[in-house]
Amino acid sequence: MTDNPLYPTQAIIEAAHERILPHIHRTPILTCQTLNEISGAEIYFKCENFQKIGAFKARGGLNAGLSLSSIEQARGIATHSSGNHAQAIAYAASVVGAKAYIVMPDNSPQVKVDAVQGYGAKVTFCKNTPEERQSTVEEVIAKTGAVFVHPFNDYAVIAGQATAAKELIEDSSVVFDTIMAPVGGGGLLSGTGLAVRYYSPTTKVIAGEPEGAADAILSFKTGKIEKAPYVNTIADGLLTYLGDKTLGIILNHVEDILTVSDTEIIAAMRLIWERMKIIVEPSCAVPFAALLKSKERYAGQKVGIILTGGNVDLGKLPF
Amino acid sequence: MTDNPLYPTQAIIEAAHERILPHIHRTPILTCQTLNEISGAEIYFKCENFQKIGAFKARGGLNAGLSLSSIEQARGIATHSSGNHAQAIAYAASVVGAKAYIVMPDNSPQVKVDAVQGYGAKVTFCKNTPEERQSTVEEVIAKTGAVFVHPFNDYAVIAGQATAAKELIEDSSVVFDTIMAPVGGGGLLSGTGLAVRYYSPTTKVIAGEPEGAADAILSFKTGKIEKAPYVNTIADGLLTYLGDKTLGIILNHVEDILTVSDTEIIAAMRLIWERMKIIVEPSCAVPFAALLKSKERYAGQKVGIILTGGNVDLGKLPF
Image 1 (cartoon, rainbow over the protein chains, first blue to last red):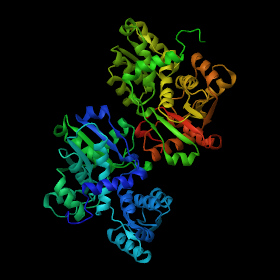
Image 2: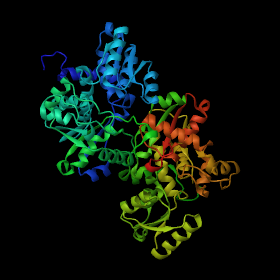
Image 3: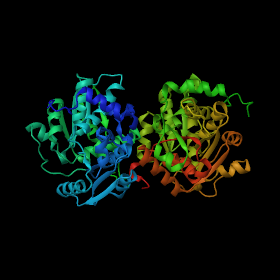
Image 4: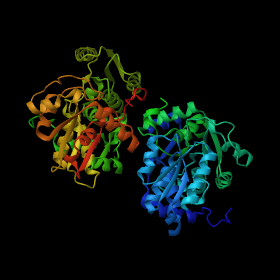
């Protein structure tokens, strides 16, 4: 694995952090006495919901975009996404002065399309199937010559996402027993696994995953990329399955994956809204839901949780 | 006015701040590039929605509670409120180890009653009219001997509320052109007027008020305590009219009062939720709504806005 010169070593993650720092927020770490009392743990929330574009994905997108050669940047950047990665690439392209070509499902919420176009990206619509997304982005690339940036199975993206946990560790005065992140395709989780290995090696990395997209927990058991037995969850940022690069890192650097139901996700999300007065999206509440579900396991522990994003449609809230 | 030894002089506000500091959060000041672009101003939001009890009222309640003599504290503290002042007094009483007797309307949301009782306060219910509230709290006081703390027309409360603007000024590196706060009974607004006078005398103080509770703007014009021509607004923290103490200070230290409609309040609230990813209650969005309504007036200005609170019923959102 480490034969690949792009594999996120400590030096590569440090270079990524330096590269993106001028263009991201060093987001705050918040604590909440009431949530500590409710959970029995001492929780430090790394608030990536306050990040540029409202989610941690700005980190990976920026690192990928800024790592391209000037010739590649001149060709433009392409990706497909209905969610935060679309905005991340559109934002990264605007930072590096490149064109962005984003393939989005034709049922994407208008607010997300507006946000992507607001960064000057060109949006191409397609039907909302993995095959249609892939073939459409391939057409766009064939036509434009743009460079494809995968949402998670890309070492530059993983190195960028790793900087969230790096900051959480650097900006906290405690040594964490556990650091938690959600898992979808595994870009954040693998980056978190590496950052913890490098900067806080005694800390355990635990992932939260929705029961309605329980692929990573299967992959974690079999050691292969698995698909979820069924996909049905409110945590729409976590629907996808792992890639070979994220799986490899997760198998080596993640302690466990815990699953939670949508009811538990919504309850955890509501607690964060009501008690912390901050807005997090359903996917973002998954690790805290997992912690609440396994209170005894984390009682008295110092736990870092990466709050991944705050992009919700206020017209469609689950409460 | 200043003949009253309790009148909030600079020294009295400083003593209040020192008194309450161990028991409050020194809340963060947040900025948002998108809201700056939308408004044309450079806005610094003082986030009292992150304050203890979820609102700035913890400051005034604490200062009042901590200023009582030990004999008074032993008698207990009484007030009437359906909102944040009830929680503030319950919290303050728990801090000083006093009993709290809170009169609440019998249609108060259960979540607010639970919060007040969570601090160990004794709740007495009454019908939701000003007369019933007053007579019920008088009965409670007659029976218990508790000391009454008025929600706003009280110099100790005003001195406590003044510390929010004091921190905003102290913790910002800019000199504000304008500082804005909402006005209900005027406790926060009068405290803000005094703090600005003492700590940033070139800054103008502007209030925001709902059209559906437009009493302060009338009082500001006539110089007398006026009632609103009608009361009908989503900003349920701003329904009440001024008291003699708050009116006196407001007439001397506030530049102007701007009114906004509920539609404007809801739109401003939604912008703060969506762009800043933080939860504010409708009353809290009133000054930002007023700024958006008068963009030309504040274009290019450095504006401080006190975000007063984040206690909303997530089951009853206006969007």
